[in-house]
Length: 248
Image 1 (cartoon, helix red, strand yellow):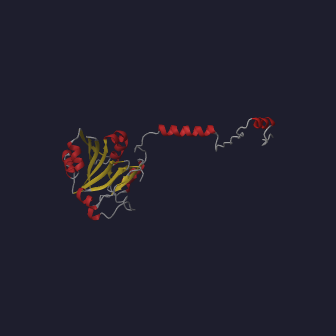
Image 2 (cartoon, helix red, strand yellow):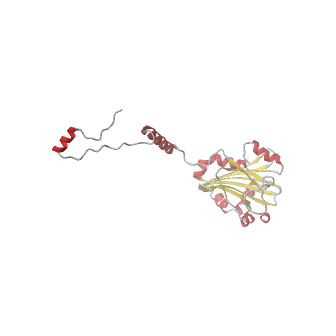
Image 3 (cartoon, one colour):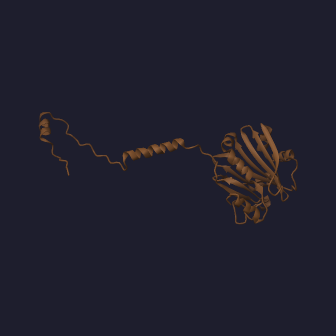
């Protein structure tokens, strides 16, 4: 095995004696934690992933089912879920994974009937919420219902007033329950609304999004709009949601 000598050769000594120069310094050895080619490949791959990653979006296959009880303001005992919420649910709808719940105050519930609300934390104006009113045995004509809802919802008033288009239709679910469905395309905003009556209450589910988010997340927003329905206390209705791929 060859060894490196620390003694200079005779030719270097004689040259140094004749013409003094800076002593020769051996360059330090460089050690890489991994082969250079591997490090460069990893860096390039990381850069490629960063450059080609799609913009963030709420579109996802993961949803959670929200079980709403539509309790009156007088019986509104707090926030969050409990073991009886699923059993006592009056309505359900899907919430995209990652959305946050906005806690509804007792005053708000008592004034405009808001029962629940969820929003996209990346864009708070992208949201879904439900309001209910007691004392309704059946649905009035579609235009009357929408105008009545707007009476206690300033955002809805403005949206209707400046709407580029407003489409309404009637639909029935598998049990024959009637729903009014509205789609409003307004100035910089899009809204989907579903309204129905059950248990002497009128339920209205809203899905709102600014125009850019609507264009980006339309499939997801339509999904959560179509997921809304009222349910009875029987386990059969809740089981139907589990069978169709919803996550309790």
